[in-house]
Length: 181
Image 1 (cartoon, helix red, strand yellow):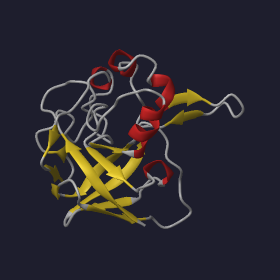
Image 2 (cartoon, helix red, strand yellow; image 1 turned 90 degrees about the vertical axis):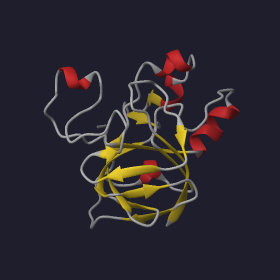
Image 3 (cartoon, helix red, strand yellow; image 1 turned 45 degrees about the vertical axis):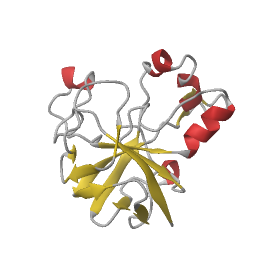
Image 4 (cartoon, one colour; image 1 turned 60 degrees about the vertical axis):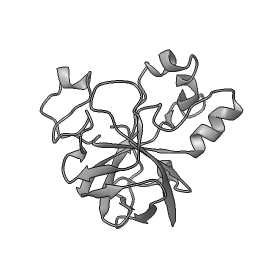
């Protein structure tokens, strides 16, 4: 199983969207070099106020580009980086990965999948009604569905660029499904 990186993005300040870059550098144990969410402990602006010492399981945000295709069919104009992700991929079933899967990005970088991104209500400020497209309650099971990407920690650093290959290494079974982090 493999896919590719289509876009990389980072932002040194807190902002909903992240500008696209020619490359990003991943730093082991920290995240995307120069990104506001890089760090060994929680960097999420809201969560830092009440859980500042917890490990940062959200060092890198990855999102599947196919989501933008689906959203466009529903009338939403959303481009890579606009939902705050660092790495946008194509042909990778990010949401179907188990916890602990390793993603090999380009020649050197490796990230470990920690869980699902819990979308922020600010997404509706960006595009009204968008939250309902990426986060919903299943009326039958009562479970929440998260479609706004996955989170990961950097296990091995390296530079990541658009068009880099994405290799997937599954952990030993039994596999644990992704939960929000």
